[in-house]
Each structure stands twice: as C-alpha cells, then as structure tokens.
Image (cartoon, rainbow over all chains, first blue to last red; front, side):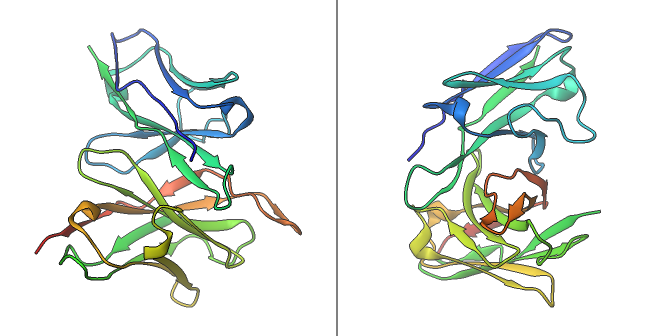
Length: 110
Length: 128
C-alpha cells in the first residue's frame, strides 16, 4: 500500500516559518489534504486539494507539492499553531482504494 | 451548520463486536456528493482511516480491516453505523466520524474529497 512519510517533529520560533513535509512516491500526481489536531481535540482540515484553504483558516497556512513531496507551510507562526499535523492521500494503487494518513508531525513553538 | 456526533460503548471485551453510531445534522446522507467516513486514533498514535459510505450507498473499506468492518446508514434517522467484529486490545482508540462532500457525475463520486467536518470522537477501550 501507499506509504507517506513525515518528520516526527518541527520546532519553530514565534513569527518564523514552519514547513512540514509529506513524502510519497509520485505524490505530486495525487490530491493531498492536511489536518491540524490540537491536544484533546478532533482534527481540523487546514488545506485541501494540495493548496486550497477552507473558510476560516488563516492565509498563513499554505500548501504546495512537487514530484515526491507535499509541503504545508505555516507563515508567521503563532503559539496557537502548536499541534499535530497530518497529511492524507487517496491510495488508488490497489484493487481496494482507500485513504492513507501520514504518521503526523508535531509542531512546537519555542 | 454541519455537525456529527459519535456514540457507542466505552468498554468492550476482547472478541466482542462493537457498534458505533454517527448521528449527523445539517446535511442529508442522500445529497449528491455527500458522504461519511470513519477514522480512528489509538492513544498517542496517528490517524487511521477505516471506511466510508457515500450518498448513493457506495461503500469503501480499509483493506487491512475490511473483513472485520461493516458500514451502513439509516437515512430516516440520519445515522451512519460502523460495526467492527472480533475486537482486540489493539483496537483501543478514539473513533471519529467525518463529513465529506465531493464532485459527482454519472460515472460516480470523487472519492478523494477532503473530510471537512469531524465529530468530537468517542473512546472505545478493549479490555477483559
């Protein structure tokens, strides 16, 4: 099945830029969604279809992709951005397509 | 406003079958393009997608759990039900349901639509 890789953690100072990567074979050809999950809460969609932002998500959140890496960028990081971030793609490579989540990246604001 | 709420037992014994219910509001299970997914998260671990049911009744399952899962819907009660058999302590997790709405046409519904609204989750512990 399709495997996604994410760094376990990213640390960033307030006001700086955090970049969270999601690696996968030819991920650039797939639609990638990103979710933010704060402790004790349900995940929240922050980026969908690689780079679109849901209503209510700050413009500081953006998405991009290349051949084998998708990236979630958080500009001007705030303390409230501390959370786990998960990428997600639809794996249609097998006879039973299904959703795959990455292992998650914990963003710590120093 | 779309909302989803999960309910079910908090504790089950190994080998038992668990039935989880997702009660929805703010949308219809039969609206073109709509769907509900189930996702779980063991304590301190990552999200794992389980299953989905679409507006037209189409169902998809995680291949690694397919033999143990059944997803159904009751449109009159606005509920989606997930049944998981042969529960094991490794199935201890918070179980979430989530809404999706994707593009559809005569050939089918886009399965890659994002999960835009999630329920609060329900913790199911498996222990003897």
